[in-house]
Length: 257
Image 1 (tube, rainbow, N blue to C red):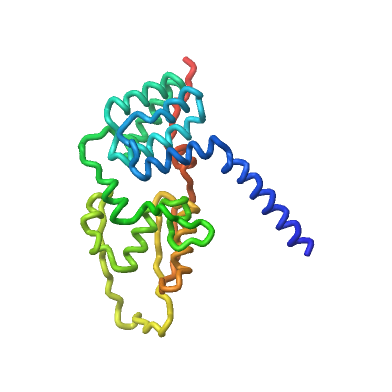
Image 2 (image 1 turned 30 degrees about the horizontal axis):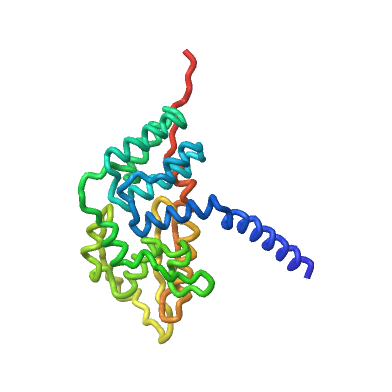
């Protein structure tokens, strides 16, 4: 009973600390901008919130995350918008961050728009990446983990299980990087007959890292009554948006001559 009481007190304290952040005006303003990007609102324009936050010298990682999100949701930024962001960051946070901006461009997170066609709205609509009526208290879809946004990686896993990637072949071509589907034939001696009601097991391997939200989404998928699937997660690292951007930040080492 004492251990349970201590555990309850710890969880209550954690919940109160989280609530202080999530009910703050700063958190709500940032969340609103993120959700606007995810739904395709004014992604091709200079964002006044990002501009104001740079002027207020908010943490650089926060600024970079928003810039990258806008870029990804718009298939790149217009050259004048990208140049403005770069200039403001270098003048406000220091010219040593030109290396960080270069790393983000190499990773494809921040890039100039080379085509007027934006594939993200098609990807979002076809794969149902945004759900307006996401229920966080009694969820019925993986989008609850991001308050409306369904992680692309988990949605692809869900589609692969049923009805299969062949149903979204055209959308897969719009995603960065190669994709393929290969079915391996097991030797006769390794075939195991599944019992009725027995779940299938799928290994999902994340190269580069996986977030806790993606893990929660996969766990939710396996708990769905009609899933018939259990998921085993393997990854090279556990990450979040902050640690990912931080790993791409670079500063030149100072040397004394």
